[in-house]
Length: 305
Image (cartoon, rainbow, N blue to C red):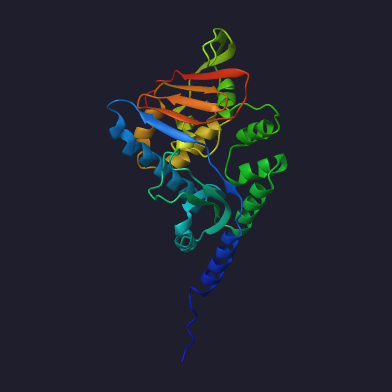
């Protein structure tokens, strides 16, 4: 008589450990407010828009599965947490919880189909050691962890340096505006404009006219529509463009996505709110609050892709 070892024994032990870790997560983060208003005759494009977001979410995982990068950050519904743990372990991946996240579905345009508002943000890796390192860095925070996090998530060294510098700034503005300002060929204009109460020439405004590479256009990142998981150091960063191509190979609808991201769009930010105008929609999302200037980015790009 032969003793047949249960192939799921070790997996079940690990699952119980993960469940305990999940129950210990007390920190709850409210993600950026995001809302969309579709232009007339453009609402039919919403299915494609959210398909792009879902495909990127999948690419976040597949780039780790194929060891394009060491780690990724994945968002799962809390009710599917155990199921996802099994799925990830079958793929040879380690799946560790970072924190709980709540979404106000009355404000946030949902990417996920469930009506549940609670999610678990998780670190994913093919290496338990690297997954544990990422979780530790994310929980500890601080500038010392920025470089380690960037390397684990596969960010280019130039973008890590930019992120490190940005994390140390006391009066930081939105990193989207910072990236636009560093882009080669950017044209900058400054003027005084009316404030929200209609008083003329009350508020300083700074406008950047810039060509953004569609492969690294992250203006709609808070809506899940993007091709990289980081903010590039500039919108002509060649290293970010290389990483984008690795993500795009796992995104079946990449051709239509790049055409959309190549279209001109306008990004306006003031007092912690950013408005993004595109040919299909107007999106509103949370930015970094400051009280001194209005910031505009006009994407002049009309590159054929």
